[in-house]
Image (tube, rainbow, N blue to C red):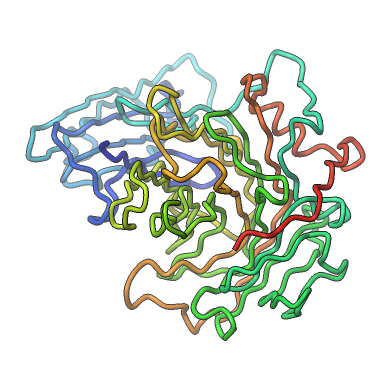
Length: 451
């Protein structure tokens, strides 16, 4: 299956989706001439008004502007603010690759009957996407005309909520590189700071704290000098099968969470801040194929969502198929962001597997295709939120300029939706609901924890 690559750039406070080729390691094979869009926001302005121009190309090697108002070599995707426009202006963009050339021409219209723009008039639009045969154009989530459906306790696979007693919740804490997990019911109310619980090292710091804009939150604090982690610095909450959070197969489910970094600075090393994984590693269960089959990774001011799949049991990691679903450039990790994932995982195309996502209410490109691994049905598929230092490039290590990294997380919620009855608005309403309106999920019996 051909990989699909997207890239998203945040322009001021507005998310604008810009698709650009990614690294050579994951670059998709281009066999057609470039896709190209050229748009204005707004399309018509008063005399002397301002508009934002956005051009988006996919598969291009170079792009050139022409016309009376701009010319010369341009970035393959980008924006420009057009100010004090007093008459109609026509702009042309031409993008090229080895298979051909694509040209788009568009006119920004000036209407003398329109009242003057007020200072600070927004010039943003919902995200713009270049043509892609296997993607759904992103939209901003709009109010649902139907009444909000209440999500019952029976619909919830798992909840990790900093506002509630940990002992009433079903999740595990993984705060070292050796794989030992501690059940939420066994964690002291004060949290853990390099403690040993039930004979297992908890590694780094995990506590509840308070954020002025969010209230109670989970705090993960990971230091690069932690020796117990053996290069696997991590501190994560895991929604596991044994803790009530097995991710369904061939069934729709939702995962919602929010996070922000504390005084992070861009660096070349990678951090996974959310992932879906498989607990496996023995003969016949997929062995080495088990990278995260979903990874939300922050690196160099960039947030990337990757999906993986492999239909062969026991295949090496190098054979995994990797799909970059989307990338947000200039991502401000030091602000709160809310993520909503909706998915149906399967390795059978007839099941119509898919992955949908929203970031801060903005619908991202939809992936339709296989993801996951060929392992026995009883193998636990888990969701994790937290911090995992992911070294994917040789020679890239944790920078000495930022030895401590802290992440704040709000609630993490998993919801089953086999009948596809819930909407984005239902999920968000439940996610933001006060604690008093949410029932307490049943606590599962003490299990044997996965290794």
